[in-house]
Length: 231
Ligand code: FPP
Image (cartoon, rainbow, N blue to C red; front, side, top):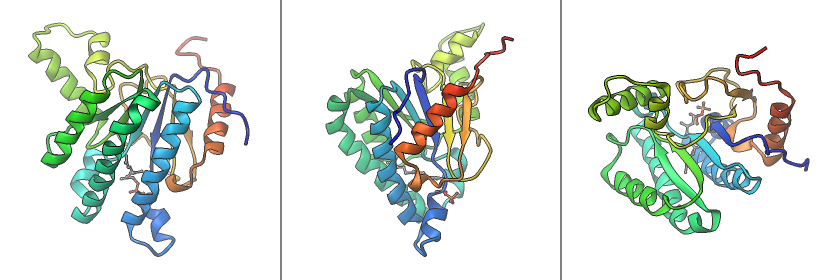
């Protein structure tokens, strides 16, 4: 395998697309794809941490997915998430990683909300960060952030205020966003934070994404000239 070069990447984000197609191409139900996708999520989140990336954000469920996916599919995703959160309580100290579920928790099942609260509290002392976006929408996140600032008494809001009031508050902006699954769009993900992110789109379906391809995406990132609006 090629060597990872992640030294310029403080925050890597993933749009994990393609579980459904991966399963259907094998004659299996979509839920089977999510199960495989969750295994890959666990493996690659750990890989990113091992190669020194301090913050990873993954898109597991959008606000639109929550409205439009079947009950069975959502139930399967919630089970996978609960299994992961349970395990994260054990692995967080070893990985030195705090886990945060970004997005609007209010419509999620009560037992899942309770687990999220516990995991976020218990892991908050660790230094690396893993954000999992669930019932997440970038527009919704900005609106919630601004409303929080207003409720806190702000009458004049700066960019820094919004940065810290977002669900990703405390994280640097994503250096690169990798989207699997053949689609070339942003899908309401990290709209504010991605102002100067580099994108890497791949036809690989999420369950087929490998460490090797992440290394290739990092090489691609390192070959780009980031100008941040400069010449
Ligand atoms: C979108 O593509 C993906 C999702 C709605 C779910 C992604 C979830 C995971 C990768 C598992 C997450 C698990 C944990 C524990 C965080 P799609 O699957 O709808 O695929 P399609 O575009 O091929 O239909």
